[in-house]
Image 1 (cartoon, one colour):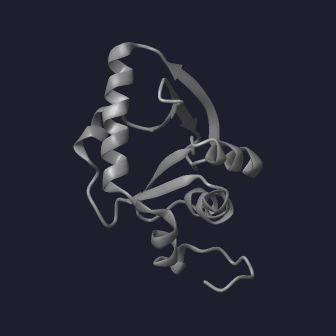
Image 2 (image 1 turned 30 degrees about the vertical axis):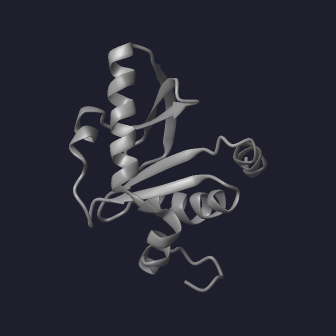
Length: 134
């Protein structure tokens, strides 16, 4: 996975992600940050955090609830999770109107969110015991 992220970044098409963090963060959200995003950013993924304890949800996101991805600027894939936050599956959203709504929401989320590393470094209370300094 990290090799793919590096290759995409080297090709000039880095993966971008905005993670909405609830308050308090679920165990799975903390896990994703510590064991996933922390490593992904070193491989070239551009990750930002929208912490709902620190800022309001942009109104554009109210029309596109849930977790979803835009693949190569074209396909919209909605993610589905268990109540505890674990990934369950994905669904392709293919109507033009829905795709446009998601592109607008993605831009709003990206602009409202903060860079992952800065957010993570300012929240050591969310770090798991990983054997590294918090």
